[in-house]
Image (cartoon, rainbow over all chains, first blue to last red; front, side, top):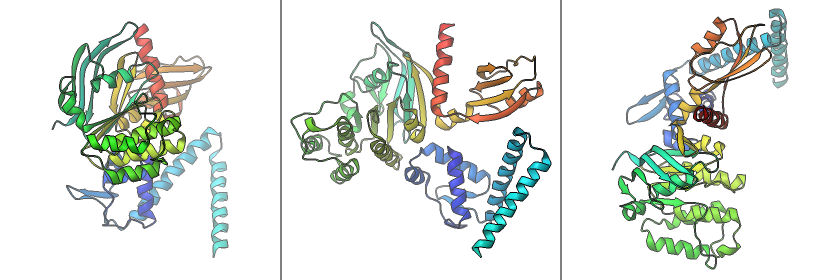
Length: 119
Length: 298
C-alpha cells in the first residue's frame, strides 16, 4: 500500500504540483487526507527520502528535494520498471525478442500518431 | 503518561465452552490497532476485559496507564467505547442522548457533534426506536467520537454499515489520528477496513493471539511465489515457507518471512519462478489462521 503513496507523491512532484524546496504535508496530515494509516505514509516518506526525492529535516517536516533532474529521473525509473515488466510478460507469452521489439515499435508509432493529432 | 494507551499481559479468562489464553498486546499512543478474528475468536471478550466489563481470571490489564479493573472509573473518563449491544433509550431522541452524554463528559465538543450529524446523515429529533440498524451504529459512534476521548475502543464499528457509511466512519477514524496523542482499538472481521487505516494489526483465533505486528511488516513478510517445476522434480522444502500447493507442474508457495533469496533458492534448484505476488491482509489472515490451527492440531 505504501507503494501507491510513493507513486502519488512522485506524480504530484512530476506534474509540478509540489516544487523543489516546497514543504510536503505532515505524515499525519497526508494520512488523514488519503485515509490511510500513519505507518503507511511514514514508510512511504522513508523510501522517498532514501531515493532522494524528498528530504526530511528534524522537527521541520519534509520538503521536496532540490534536485533539478528530479522530473526526468522519476520518469526514467518508471520507464525502467515498465520495460522490465514488458520483458517478463513477453517471455511468459513466449514472444521472441524480435516480436517484442516490433510490438514496442508499434507502440512508439501509435504514440507518434497521437502526438501529431494534438499539434 | 505511559507510551501505551492500553496494555494486556498474559490475560486469561475461562468459560465453560471457551477460554481466552495468555493474551498479550499493547496499543502504542498515536496509533490505530486493528483487531481481527473470526466469529467467536475472543475479540469481544478481550475488549470487555480491557474495558473492565468482564474481569480477567489471570493477567495484568492497564488502560491509559491505570490498573484494570480496579481503577476503571478514572481510566474510562478518557476512553470512548462503542459496541453493537450499546444501550440506547428507544423512547428518547438522538438529541436527548447527546445532551445526556454532554452532561457527563466535559470534553464534549458540540461543534464536532453537529459536523458528525451532517456527515453521518442523522436527524437529532428522531427517536432511537425508529432508527435503522446502520443509523443506530452511526449514532453510537457519534456519541463517543464527539467526546474526543484519548482512546477509542470500537467493537465492530463498521459491521452492518453500507459502503457509504463505512467510508464516513473510516474517514472519521483517520481524522482522529491527526492528533498524535489519541489512539484507537477497533475490532472487525472486515479485513479491508483494517488494512486501510490500521498501523498495528493483531490476529486472534480460538482465544489465542496468533500474530501481532505493524501492518507494513505484515504485508512485507507475506508473499506468494508461483513456480513451474521441471518434470519429476519435487519442490524442495525451504525455511519460511508456511504453505505449498501443487497441481501438476505448477506450484504456489506461501511464505511469512519473505526474503529476496527465497525465489533465488528455488531458481537454483532448477525451478522456474513465474511471479512473486503480494498478498492482501485477508489472504494473510486466512492463511495465518489455517496454519496456526494445523500447528495446534498436529
